[in-house]
Each structure stands twice: as C-alpha cells, then as structure tokens.
Length: 129
Image 1: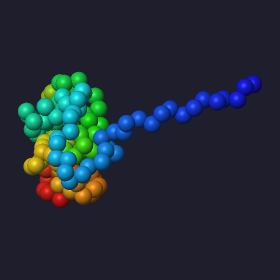
Image 2 (image 1 turned 90 degrees about the horizontal axis):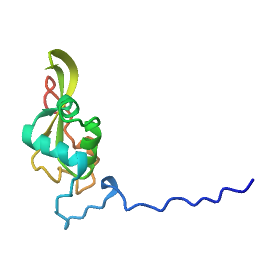
Image 3 (image 1 turned 180 degrees about the horizontal axis):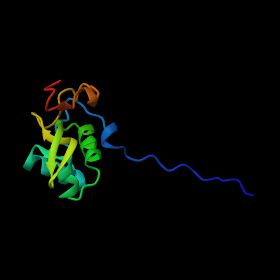
C-alpha cells in the first residue's frame, strides 16, 4: 500500500461569522441567496413566522439563515409564540422574526458581544428579557 499523501484543502477566505469588524467600516454587508430572500421577507412582512418562510417561500432552514445574518451584525429579533393557528391547525412554540432598530449593526456587534446576549429572544407571554 502507498501512504496517503493528500494535502489539506487550502484555507478559505472566511465567513461572515469570523469577519473582522472595525469601527471605521460602517458598510452594511452584502447578503445573497436565501439569506437575502429571508431578509427581504422580514422587511416586508415583519413579524413573519418561521412556518411562512418554510411552507410559503420554500426556505427549509430559515433559522440557519437568521443565524448567519446575526453573525453579519443584523439586528434580527425572535419572538416565540406559544400557540399559532397555521393552515387550520394549532402549532406550538413558533418563532416570529422581525428587525430591530437599528437594522444594522446590532447593538454590541462592534464590541464583540456574543450574539446570544444580543438577539432579543422573547416570548409573547414573558415580555422582554
């Protein structure tokens, strides 16, 4: 047998989650693909239910797109609705997404605060955190 001399893949250019942010760079990041579609739908219909993104707009992993946009610094708020009637059936614990103010950058983004402290997970019954 010959030894496996495969080389590691070259490092990529990075992702939005590890992109450096400086105080001088105040340009909103470019959003493309499904993330751009999700952002446009949130802007148009906010708050929009995750069920609508999945069922009506064919975006199967909406939460992943939201997570990626938060990593870019977008101020996307999530509200968990305990009960929603969707297509004639009661659905439980459904996420609704909306944009906070300012839309970008989210508060704390330039200081490097972790997104879990910033994204505003809320519950209809529980009020703001």
